Image (cartoon, rainbow, N blue to C red; front, side, top):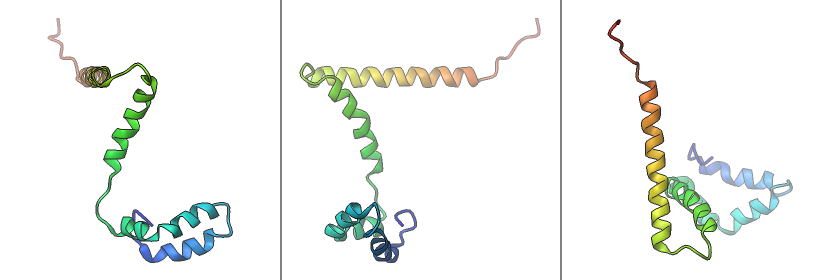
Length: 102
């Protein structure tokens, strides 16, 4: 439904879901139906933002109680450098090695 932007399928889906195992999920959709309709019809997505937050949350949890903003920032920058180095290594290993025939 979301990917196809087929909002007319929402009400029949809710009717089928109410007596099933996902009834509480369907009831939650009914309570906020305006927002769900907007999410289906909108061309915008916050998926990229949510992905970044998902990566940040475990780091924050690990550092709970001892990390301040400067330590968190250093950790995130360190992780970014490690990822960058890994990407460089992968690109170098996939580059063919040219020999001179010696």
